[in-house]
Image (cartoon, rainbow over all chains, first blue to last red):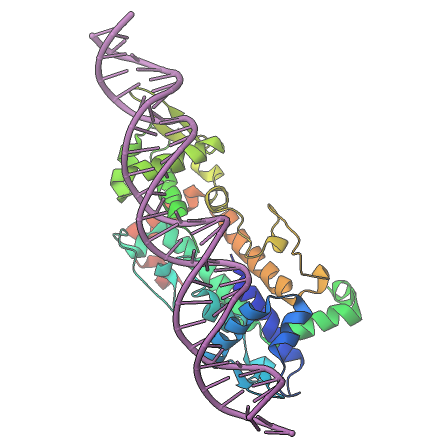
Length: 152
Length: 152
DNA sequence: GCATACTCTAGTGAACCGATAGGATCAGAT
DNA sequence: ATCTGATCCTATCGGTTCACTAGAGTATGC
C-alpha cells in the first residue's frame, strides 16, 4: 500500500514537473494546490532533495525545482525514496535484498516465486513511468477525451 | 509489503494443500514444519476458516483442512483476507474502493492512472496463482532441476 | 539588518504488527 | 459423567510505523 507520504511526494513532483523551467516554486504553493499539509510536505521535499531529485533556493524568490527534466524522473525512484523497496518481500528485492531466515531453500520457495513475479510486474510499471509520461497521459485524456478508447 | 501474517497464512495453506484429502491436520504440525509461532498461526487459521477457506474439527483427531480443492484457492484470496486490499491506493481497489478526498477529478489523476496499472498487474498474478499451481511449480523445479531453463 | 524561505531535530497521538496468555467451548474416549 | 485433546475466542502487550506539528536554525536577497 502506498503511504500518504509517497502520494504527497508524487503530487508535489508532478506540480514541479508541470512548471519545469519556470524557476523555484514555494512549498506553500505546492501544498495549497493539492491540499497537502504544508509542514509535512516540507519534510518530504527535503528528503527528495537530499536524494538528488530536487534542488532548492533559499530566501526571497526561493523554492524548489526539479534537478532533472521530467522525462528523467520515474515514479519508481520517488516511491523507493519515500516508501522503501517495491518488492512485496525482502527476499525478492533487487535494491534491498534480504534472505528470509526461515526459508530453507530459496530457490524452491513457492511464495517467493509468486512474489517475484509481482515484483517484476510492479517494478517494470513504476520504473518506466516518468513524470513527463504522467503529465502527457492526463493531457491526452483532458483534450482528446475518449479518443484513445476509439483508437483501440 | 506482504506482512508476516500473510506469509504464515500462505505457508500454512500450502502445507494443507499438500496434504489435501488426508483428513484434519494439527495446528502444531503445520507450525512445526515451517517454524511458525504456534499461537500466532492459530489466529491466522481461524481467520481463514471464518472466511470459508478452511474447515476444522475439534477434539481428538481434529485439526484443519482445506474447504476446497487446492486448485480452487488463489493466493489473492488469502492475501486479501489477511492483509486487506491488494490495490496500492484505495481509489483503484475493486474489492474495497474508496474515493480519495483530495482528488478533484479521479478520471484525470495521474497517480491513480499509474497505480491502476499496478493493481491490474498484481491482481492478475495473485488471482491466477492457485495453491495447486504453487505446488506444481515447485515440484517441477525440484524434479526437473534446471530443465526448464534449457527449454527456454 | 530584516524579512523571507528553506533546513533540521524533536516530539506526539493514533494505529498497526507480531506475538503471547488464558480461558471457553466442543468432540470423542473411557 | 468425566477426562482429555483440540480448536475457539478475547484481551493484552511491547515495539514500530504513520501522519503530522512545533520550533529553533540558517542561508539569501533587498
